[in-house]
Amino acid sequence: MTIATPPRLGPDQLATAHLGAAVKGNGYLVLGRSIDALSMSVGRGAEVNHRLGLVMQRCPIIWSAVEDTWTFLTGPRTPLRTETVADLTLLGVTWPPAGARVQLPAAMPGAGDPVWVQAPGVEAELPGWSTVVGAARRTRFGGW
Image 1 (cartoon, rainbow, N blue to C red):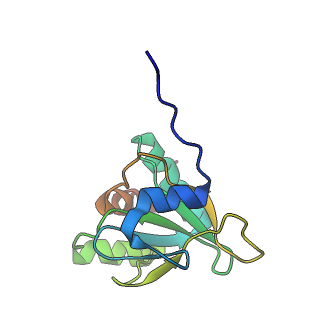
Image 2: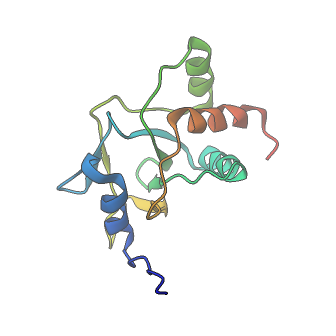
């Protein structure tokens, strides 16, 4: 019996393989139909990532040195209640409009270029938008 070994891909190849058609030629991701994003401060992002890990969710995360934010790549956006929008705004969580571009990290990023905090997994699915929104809202009460 032979066990297949998954190919060893670099983070940029993983992104293209995992994120698929949303990845465009110049190394950017177009948000909308199949993929979306939430951005927040590095500190809040670390807490959100911890909370996602507690429920066995793993999310590709990009660090923007220019803005000093973490951007979580998620499944498609779902409608938000007014109270949820208010909570996220209070927490400094933002979400780009559909059609916006997110620059993907290069294999050899230069100074100021985005880098992977957590690169996409080979076969992992993106966590749902509401899962990441919920984790972000729970950070309002601290306790991690």
